[in-house]
Amino acid sequence: MGKRITKKSAPPERRSPCPVACALDVFGDRWTLLIIRDLVLGKTRFKDFAASPEGIPTNVLSERLSRLLAADIVSHVSAGEGSKHLAYILTPKGNALMPVLKNIRDWGLTWEKGTQVLMAKVPLAR
Amino acid sequence: MGKRITKKSAPPERRSPCPVACALDVFGDRWTLLIIRDLVLGKTRFKDFAASPEGIPTNVLSERLSRLLAADIVSHVSAGEGSKHLAYILTPKGNALMPVLKNIRDWGLTWEKGTQVLMAKVPLAR
DNA sequence: TAATTTTACTTTCAAAAAGCAAGTATAGCA
DNA sequence: TGCTATACTTGCTTTTTGAAAGTAAAATTA
Image (cartoon, rainbow over all chains, first blue to last red; front, side, top):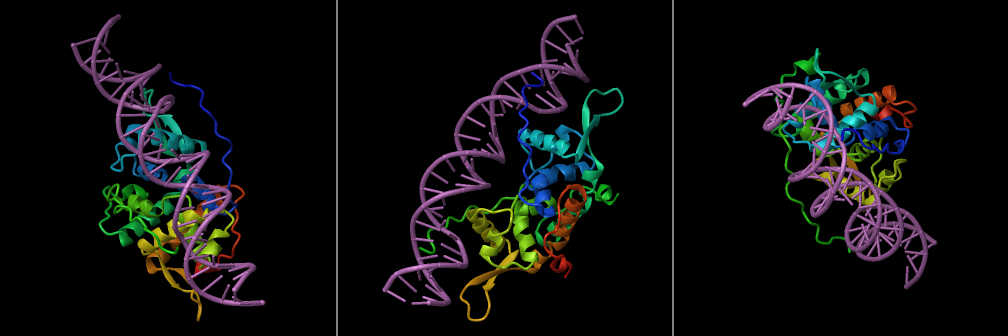
């Protein structure tokens, strides 16, 4: 069945009013920023995210996308004319994470040996 | 007893060569960047980190500090003249995370309602 | 149009990680 | 010498993760 009882977990409580802590409550985990990375790189579909080399489990991907939708970081739109499929795109709030992602990428490239950017930087530069 | 058998977990395997993914392997969790935030703000001692408003559990703090030491993001130094206690400070690799932290802070301040910087920005500005 | 495949998830469950409370070792002080 | 603070470590319970299998609707193929 498509939709069952989806338990709305209690309103996520903040650990502190610190902007860093609140930001980490939203994307402080091993996967969320990788999904946002993919979105920045132009991916829009569930299967595209699932196909990324890190191999995010589909249930984690599903859960993270729900959270990103709830946090107004991504939005759900139709995937092209006539298609009934849905695509994910970044909202302004999500796009505002690009500087964060860029800095993390640059830090990784500088300090973590053997890392490399596989995709063109173009989308990140937009 | 001070030191027991400390099981060295297997060499942390990378999920991909992506610099973002590798960076998240290092600090992609709910606590690590908060410890680095505290270090940037001038805190140096175990108890100082533990006293932060988010209330990090001490075993998590201990484990994260070990990982940060192993990752060469913090180093262990004497806490003042004569003291036999130890303090933690950021290495150059750790200091290089300041732009990341700044961007996360700014994103939080802009997009997460009710967040506020409790400590002076001075150390972040250095 | 019926059967098959793809898409987009959800469910299940074992394993790992998180979090709390209590314990332990060392150092400094009275 | 005992007391207290620091800096962790150890158990134990709860929560989260992650792999695999299941499900339903849409798209494709026969």
